Image (cartoon, rainbow over all chains, first blue to last red; front, side, top):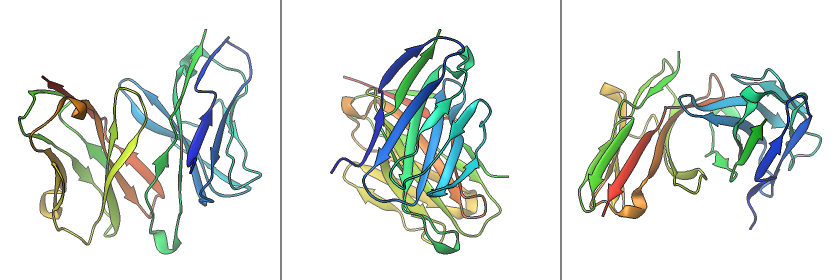
Length: 116
Length: 114
């Protein structure tokens, strides 16, 4: 039972480069999320997806692009990385539900990204 | 506005002491969920508990217990007889169906010394 996985776990890149962080879940959860975690800011939502081909912005979407062509995958792309995007990135998923109800959100192990 | 406040930034206790982590939330919704997550030094986020707004029963799971009080908008977490392995950052979070978002508190770093 792999659950939710992220790759790579660690990444060092340079300013201006494009970087893609991968997220894969085996539960067929409808909802998937990307967060970044920074000291002093806690966890902030970047983008989320309610289903394949449906995505929406979170609290801090600038500089990021997402796609969701398949239910199980939700890649996050930094089109032109900046130093301010140095962070730990967490992917999460949950079942979802009708009427605003929710199931628990489960998190991947995180990707530590450093932009030089 | 939705907000979660964990006023304790860091707590340090000696092993076997009891410790309570405070969580206060703000929401205008009548239906919402509250969560606690643990982030150990290894970095992953581990789900601990979920509580919906209609269930104010306290819950106990081993050395962990949670006290949910709607009257004070609080969802506090107590660890009894703390152990070194409890050392971690603990996050309280609020989910509201109206926003569809999970709002996290800033986290409380718990250090349990041997």
